[in-house]
Structures are given as structure tokens and as C-alpha cells.
Length: 393
Ligand code: HEM
Image 1 (tube, rainbow, N blue to C red):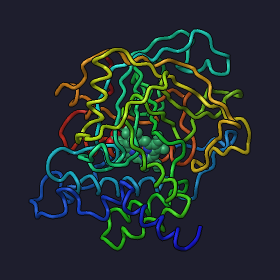
Image 2 (cartoon, rainbow, N blue to C red):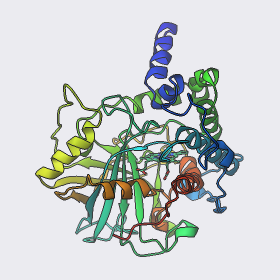
Image 3 (cartoon, rainbow, N blue to C red):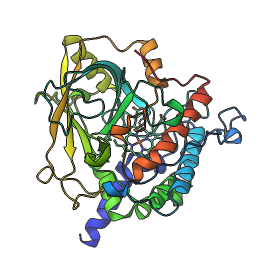
Image 4 (cartoon, helix red, strand yellow):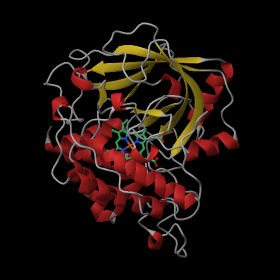
């Protein structure tokens, strides 16, 4: 890349990244006013979180801990807490990223009737049908981000009625198994120290924010740029990836896999010429007023040691590791946009560690997510004074 192209790339990155646009423009309502010390203010910071044991690495599956990884995870949690307490000092506390939901919809997760033994693991029991919630979101940390702005798009699936003890020690009896996906195949950071540097840049002053591309490095900046560039016509018509790997099965035959969800049909709604602020919620409503929607749930088994479990910045190419369908997601015709359901949606907590041991999260990003998601979910529930609990229906 020539110097001129590189400068152009970094300028575009600063203007387009969701976390950079929050960085270079003032926070929507947090930075500009003096406010009293409320329960949400920095004075009340650092929600005590029960110390969950940090995951151990599974070298057989290619996992390797980074030096001081658990400490980095804890520090990232602190930085994210600062971000929320500043951004949401007045009013409702949101998720630090993906705060804007297009809706939470009811779904059925139906495992295929026939599955090869290698896939027939954990909750993937042939013919089994589970109720589920799906939360569709924008990635930007701005809760009021206009849908037409380029962004990453999230799909978080919470499958219910899944029997068996789960991995999160303090929610081991929950009946939920979560799958969390974004509409891009790779994640922008491998190293915990880079992720922490990014969070510190985001929480810092203007000059700190200019350092973001340097903290992320060239490859990380490029992936973050690409991830946050999408415009979609309808959240039900995008393809989503887990980005990071998960275990499938237990014992000697366990393997690493990644997940993906794609629509059953090629239909693509046009992006409206005069989009309203929340047109993706509108598109979701229109589709689910009209009838049922079908999506496919896929797994991508790890096929060779050349595909890294720790390097989430490098895609497992489908030509090297094909995806296989294991289940159908049916999102039935429904009305979802009600105040009660939207409130329930806000209060849900997704975590890759809401999982059976057969679907254990793998790799550094996933290991850190165990303690960080738990911490941030506690922070926002505490700020909103609402109970945290896994849904049963
Ligand atoms: C070290 C890496 C990561 C960190 C620190 C991180 C942090 C977080 C946090 C704190 C939340 C909000 C949790 C809550 O308030 O309940 C969140 C939500 C989310 N994250 Fe991550 N994340 C990471 C990696 C990933 C990856 C690899 C994906 C890829 C799929 C992802 C996708 C999402 C999505 C879709 C949501 C919204 C879930 C919902 O709808 O509630 N994150 N992330």
C-alpha cells in the first residue's frame, strides 16, 4: 500500500469505525454537561463482580494462554465499565457495544433429523426442537446510531430448554445455550494487550483517540474498518459468523468449530432511498407481519493445524474448512415490537459461556469474554436496578 493510500485508509477508518466516530465526535449526552454524582457516575464505579475462575487453555485443541491474560481481561472490564458509566450517566444503561436492538424475536431452533456422529454433540441432538430468542443489533457503541450509517450487525441467539450443567459457575443450572454472531467472518484483535490499549484510547481524550489505529495495528485496523462498513436492508437477510471458535463434543474426539447463520433464501430487500432512523426495526416488523422466516445454522469443523484456534484475525477459508448445516432456525410470524418485549430484550444477557461443556468457547477473545460479559452485564443491571436472570420461556 502506498503512503498516500495508507493515509486515505486511516482517515476513512477514523471517520467510519463506530468506536472512532464516538471517539472523534463528542459523546451524545455525556461529555458536554456537568452532572451530579448519581449512582451511575464515575464515583460509584467498579461494581464488585464475583471472581469467576479464569478459563484454562486446552492445548490439544490449539489453545495457548497469553502472558497475564486474566489480568488484561479484568482491566478491559474496568475500561468498558468506565465507558458505560460515562456514556449512560443519565438515563438507561446499555450494553457497551451493540446497545441498539432492532428487536428481540421468538424463534425455533430445530436440529436436523439426521446428523453425522461428529456433529451430534451437546444440544445438537437430531430432531430436537428448542424455543429461542434472537436479538438483532447494530455494533456501534452509540445507542441512538442511525441504521443507515455503516456498522457491524449482531445476531445473538439464546436457545432455551437445553438440559445439562452449563459452564458459567454462577449460572450452571440455567437452561440456556447462547450463540453470538456478527455479519463478518473475522475479529479485529488477537492480543489482549492490543484490545486493552484500544479501550484505553477510546476512554481517553482526543489525542488518545487518534492512536486507535496504532493500538490495533494495520491488520486489526483493516478488519475493524471492514467489519464496521456494512449497510443492510433487513437483519433477517444478512449472513452472520461466530468469528471465534468453539469446542464441539468432549473427550478424545472433541474438535474446534466455528458457527455461521445464513438466510434460507437469497431474497435481499433494497436499502430504502429515504431511510428512517430505525428502518431495520421496520424491515424486521414488515417481514414478520407477512409470515415465517427461515435461517440455517451451520458449523465449520477445524480441518488442519494450519487453521489457528488462537488467531481470530485469519479466516478459516471455506475451501479449507467447509460449513455444514446442523439446524434450521424458524422465526415465526409475530408481533415483537411491544414495550414489554423491548424491555425484556434490554435486560437479557448473552454470553458465549452460557454453554454446555460440549460447546465450550475457545481462544483468547472467548476466554476473556467469560469474565468481561459477566462483569458488564452486572454493571448495567445494577445501574438500571433490574434483576439479572436467564429466561425460561
Ligand atoms: C475480547 C473480545 C470481546 C469483548 C471484550 C467483548 C465485549 C462485549 C461486551 C461487554 C458485550 C455486552 C455484554 C452485556 O452487556 O451483556 C458484548 C456484546 C456483544 N458482542 Fe462482544 N466482545 C468481544 C468479542 C466479540 C466477538 C468475537 C463477537 C463475535 C460474534 C462479539 C459479538 C458481540 C455481540 C453480537 C454482542 C451483543 C449481544 C447482545 O445482543 O446482547 N463480541 N461484547
